[in-house]
Image (cartoon, rainbow, N blue to C red; front, side, top):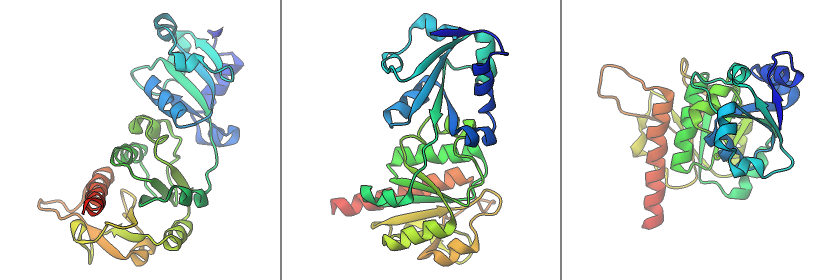
Length: 266
């Protein structure tokens, strides 16, 4: 294992550059920070090319899963320079460099999905990551990120998701591509929208269901309002008329899961 202690080192410089989206796209690489997140990525088949450890990780012993592969290059960054690549305030013990792999939406049909979440133009990485945590917990089959505004490989998406972006399949696509896929595979589309909507628990989500949520500032566009079988809303009994998009996602996703589980048990 090679020890690196200088910020002038070429390897260190290449890792630091992955903080920027343009460099992630150029190198087809991204960073994963944290033992739990890296382990989940490896379990989910993400290609890990390099693993970087700090002194604490070396002292405590590298998990066997991390040292098992001869294909992964290992580095020991001294604590001073390791802290410069860690995104979290509370420094983790490991950072991985992983490969961005293109995903073809047509491959989704192979898993026979029943519940899909469509996220149109969600802007905040923390919200996107939080929705992935809910999708993982609820067993959502896939997430379609349409009209993308947030880089899915942003460090804060991975951090907020606790690595669940690796356990829930996702596909980046246009609105049109998402709608065509859902229509071709007989999904009922329910779009979260305030005007002219019905309560989310008053629609039938027991079959193949797609739930559409929009950006924090603007909500969904007219494209999904017109594409929906029904527009749905979460009844609000307080003074405000909306929820954070990640909270709203959790409410409607679990209603869909409840209905689908009930239909299977009847």
